[in-house]
Structure formats: structure tokens, C-alpha cells
Length: 538
Ligand code: BLA
Image (cartoon, rainbow, N blue to C red; front, side, top):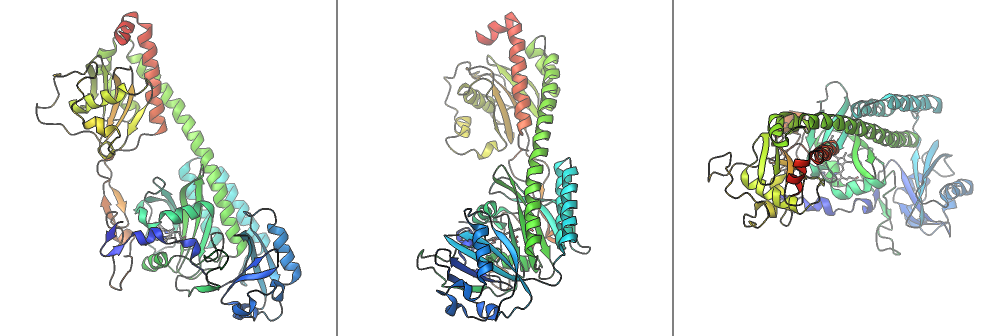
């Protein structure tokens, strides 16, 4: 577990955020056993909500506070499908302290019917006006043709639907990685976050898991006093009611502290998924408390789904275009190499390297090498040769962090100097660098084996040049502040620049495709030249 300044970050990872046993106080909650129609769990504010205290409600028929018609509607609306929640407005019943209309949201969880009640605020949008907003948001999304456009539209339209002060599109780097703000719409006077990276620890893994399942969450007021549930622990399960899908779910105290420290009072985020994985979030912040009506939340959730689907379409198209383009470029590079592979390879090394936007390129055949750009250190060439011998020709192997490979992985044989038995290992080959002075390895390598004897074609990349701008030191993402266990403020005013040490730009699917295509064309080329065939397959 990472410990920074006395705070144990593993606490964040262990916190079961779906079982915190509390809700936000602007609403109330009842969980009903659908077979018996009796309340099994009640929020502790039912007294002020329905005029019946929680302890008097548990075990009672739910129809004591909710009309039989409304209850039947909630039951029927969620019957048969545990995943799909329903929402509808009701008129406050007898004895209700809220007065006026109340929105009810219902879903099934843990075998119970979970009913959430929110007083409908006077400024909730009228259907017609609201529907126009949703249509417009979807139309603009449909018109977006690039990932960047798509994200810009998402930030703008979610802000228009909700009125939050800041809306960002935050994209993750890997499933449990840090993330970058790639689009933003923000109120004048707020510091811009566009381009900032935030440490992975800001959103722990269990939160990411929950956000894959439940696509929206609202924090109405970071200073709200959480309302407990009764019973806090359900006797039948030995655990608090599972609030994974509850709109009123109270959130982690760590995260509330985080939000206070960045100076916001309310928050909402919508999941963006790509092939079942959490690609990013549309994250929103407000200077004051908010209470988005259920249909506004649904609209944002629906927009998030449309955004996720549209993103997939765009990414697929960009990918197909890039593959076609890299195929064409590989073909033109292959033509340059038509006669005399080795000689031509050195002559046109620049073009071969450019094909993958690499810094160096190397072809190793029968112990001889040809190439250009950044030189491949001799020990790396040997190690790659051993690696290549274990792969099938044409099978791409790549890493953007050569130095970080775990033991047992290629680094093992990449650093093992004793494998002298590999066929064609060119011991004593002249090296580019001074003898005895090992040259630094590149940060990333992509390799395609061209024979089963350790011949290969490889590209290298240097350490990624551009430092990331971090909103907090990624090495010490959390520090205890003057008031105890506080997460330190972050934002553009304290930008922390750090380069990802020892990592190159990652190799894309397009890079792999281009490498494979060049390998295929070269193999064809070599096969066409009888003399070369003997050389390649001797
Ligand atoms: C949750 N952290 C979150 C969420 C976001 C962030 C968006 C989802 C909840 C929400 O919508 O507010 C973080 N918000 C960000 C980031 C940006 C943003 C990175 O706008 C940048 C644009 N957080 C910490 C540390 C811990 C931690 C050190 O910084 C652990 C101690 C925990 N964050 C944490 C937890 C949750 C969370 C537990 C889940 C909250 C919940 O849903 O209950």
C-alpha cells in the first residue's frame, strides 16, 4: 500500500462505496420486500418526509405511506428485469411533510424493491423545453466526426442540460490509470483544467468498477449530513443495503473532502464506456448545491450512452482509415526496397522509420544488420534476436516501456547475456558505440520476427518527450493538510510537470498493422527474388 505523509492510500481502495449505508438528505428511501409488500429498510428521515419515523415503518406495509396505486406502478415497472429502473411523479400523500409533487425512482436490488423519493423542485424543467434540449444535444453529437468534436459537444451539451459551472471530459489512460481532461466548458473566472492530468488514485478501482455498472452519480451538496438507514445492517444478509444503483447513495468521505478542497459544492459524473471498459467520465462541478430532476439525470445518462456509442463508431472509422493509410504507406516503402534489401534498407531507413513514427529502425538478417536513425545497442539486438526466435514470423511484439518489463517477460531474456547458443548470434559484431560502454536502450520497441532463427525487423522510440501537466504530484497524489486527513488542493494553479520516465509513446493498432503489412510485403518481395529466397530460408 502506498503511504504518503502518514495517510494510507490503501484505505481508499478498500472502502466499499456501495455499502456505506446512507443517503443524501434531500430525499428519502424505502426498500420493500416485494412478496410481502412490507418495508424492510427505511431511511432515518422518513419522519420528516412521510410523518412516520423509520423505526415505526420497518416491518409495516409500504402502503401506510405510499398509495396502493403508486406502489403497484413501481412493482410493475420494475418487474421481471432487475436492471431497469423506473421513475414517475406522485402527489404527496396524507401526512407527508414535503407538500407538492414528489419524484419516485424505483429499482430492484438484493431481492428488494428500492424506492427513492425526491421533492420535485419548482424549477424542474417543463417537458417540452427539456425535450428540445435533449434532441439538440443528440443532433449535435451525431454531427461530430472526430473524437475531439465528440468530446467538445459532450462538454457543451451536458453543461447546457444541467447548468453546472464546470463540465469536463476526462479520459483514462488504461483501466486503472491516471486521466486527462480532453474537453472542457467552464464558467468565467474558474481556472481552466484542459490538458491537465490527474493521478490514478483520484478514482480508486472499486469506484471505477461501480461506474461501469451504474452510469451516473450526483453529489448534491458536499456539506450535506448523510442520512443513515434502519436497520443499518440487514439481518438477512449481514450487510447494509446495496446502494449501487441508488440515485441518493451517499458517497465516500474521502471524495467529499477532495471536492471541498477543489472548492466545489456539488458534483455529477456520467460514465463513458468503450467495449465494456470505462473509457472516461463526463465530470461536472457546481459552485452551489444542485438537485438535477430525475429526467435530467436520465437525459444525461442517455446522452452518455449515445456518446459512448458514437465514440465507438468514430474510433472504428478512424482505425479503419488509419489501417488503409498505413497499408498504402507500407506498400510505397516496400517499393523503395525492391532491389537489394539490405542496401536499400539502409538508404531508405528514414522512410521505414517514419512509417511508424519511430526514432530508429533495424533489420537483422543472418547476423547482419541494416538500419538507420537511433542505433540499436548491441546487447538489445542480441536480446531481441532471442525473443524473435521464440515467436512466429509476422507476429508483432511491442512495448512502450522496455525498462519496466517484469521478470519472466522479455526483459528477462533481454538482459540475459548468457544465451550464446542462439543460431546466428553475431558475437563480436562491431558495435556503433565505444566498446565496453553500454549504450542506453530506447524506451519502446516494436518488433516483427522475419524468420524462426532470430531475424527481425524492429522500430525504436525514445522516451516520450512531452511532460504531462499534472494537477497533483503523481508520485505523492495525496498529502495530509493542516486540518488533518485532508487531500491537498489541486488544479492549474499548482501544475506539476512530470515526464513518464522510461516510456515511449505507445504503439497503436495502426503501428502494428503497418509493421505487419511491411513484413508481409517484404516477405513477398524476398520470395520473388530467388537469390534472396535462398538467403532467407537457407
Ligand atoms: C470518486 N473521483 C471520484 C469521482 C470523480 C473523481 C469524477 C466520481 C464521483 C463524482 O462524480 O464526483 C475525480 N473529478 C475527479 C477527477 C477530475 C474530476 C480526477 O473532475 C478531473 C477532471 N480520491 C482521492 C483519493 C481517494 C479518493 C486520494 O483523490 C482515496 C482516499 C477516493 N474518489 C474517491 C472515491 C470515490 C471517488 C472513494 C468514489 C466516490 C463514490 O462514488 O462514492
